[in-house]
Length: 465
Image 1: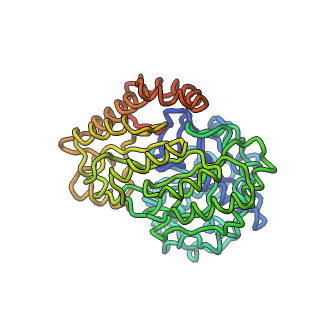
Image 2: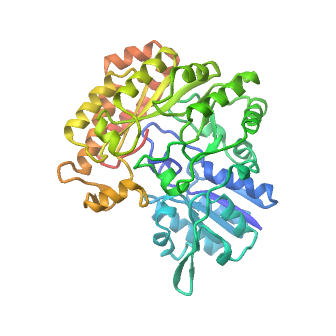
Image 3: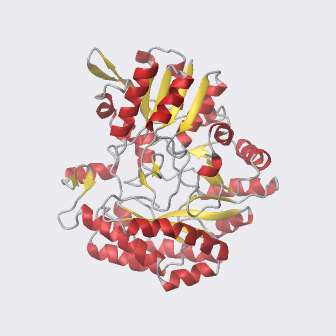
C-alpha cells in the first residue's frame, strides 16, 4: 500500500495547520506537523509514503498532480481548511481521476463538519480528530465500518462512525521522531516564523492542552476532544533534541508545538535539557500563570522566545472566554519574563463576547505599553464544536460563519486589528525597545516589509502573523 500525504498548493504563505487557517502577514511558513506524524507512523508500519508540502515548496496545481501521479498511491491524504476547500477539492478530484486513489480529507475544519466535505464527489472519506491511527487502519485495509473516527459515503448516504479517542500517552512512544520525517520529506530551510531564529524546526513533547478551557480554541474542542494533555516520556524528547543537534546541526531553534507548556512540564523538560548538557535554543507556547522560578529555569535551559496568549486587556472578556487569567497576571508575567531576557510574542484577539470599541481601544493602549517584542492581532475563526460557536450561534452573532455583532461588525474588527498592528509595531517606544536587542531588531526589520505590504491592502480578509 502506497500513501501520499499532501498539503495542497494554494495562496502563498497560507497556513492550514495553525489555529486560524489564514495567510501570514509576515511570510511565515508552518510545518505540516499533523501530516508528518501520520507519515512517520505509516513508515514505521512498513508502508511506502510520500509527504509533499506543495504550498510551502511553491509547486503549482499541475506540478503537484504530476508528483502524486509519479508516486502512484492507493491512498491520498489531503489536509484541508474552510477557506481553501474549493481549491483542495478540485485538486483531489484530478488526483482521484489520474491515480484512482482513495481520497481522505483531514484537518480541523474537516473534523468540525465532515458532511460538508463529503458532499464533494472527490472526497471519499473524512477523518476526524487526531487522524494518525485512522489513516494507518485505512492503509491496513480494515473495513470502513470497523474504523472509528471517520465519515464516508455509502449508497448515496453519509455514514458517521463513532469518534476515535485521541492518541494515548503509551501510543505516543511508538511514533518516530517527527524531525526525522521532516528531514527526509521536507525542505527545512523553507519554514520560518517571524519571532524564531531561522532555520527552525518544531515538534510535540505532548498532545492536547493542560488548560483546555478557552472558548475559542479549536484544539481541545475539535482535534483532542477534551482528552487533556498527553505527554511523551522525557527520555524520548531529550533523544529527539540530541538527534536534531547531531543530524540537523544547521537548525538554530526548536519550537515546542504543545498547545501550552505548563509549569510542571516546563520544569521537567528544562531540568532534563540541563542534565544532558544540550546547548540549543528552544521556544514554546506559554500561559501568563508561569511563575518566576519556572521562567528562570527555562531561561537557564536555553528557552529564547515565549508565544503567549494575552487575548484582551478586559478582565470580563478574559473571564467569559474561560482563559483563566487576568490583566494583572499578564502584567506581572511580562515584567518577570522581560527581566529574565525572554523574547515575548503576544497574541491578542478582537471580537470575543463582551468586546466593544472601548475594550478594543483599551487593549491596543495596553498592548502598546507592555514591553513586548512581537504582536499578533486576530479576529477568531469560529469553529463548530467550540463553546464560542455555541454562544455566538445562540444569539445570532454569526453571519456566514463570521463574527458580526449589531454594535461591532466583522469589518470593524478587521480594521481594528490592522490599526493595532500599525500602532504597536510602528512607534518610537517599540523601535527603541527593539534596538536594545540588535538581532531581534534586524529580524523584526526583515519581516516588517511583509507587514507593511499587508497593511497597504484594502481587503478585509484577516491574516495571521
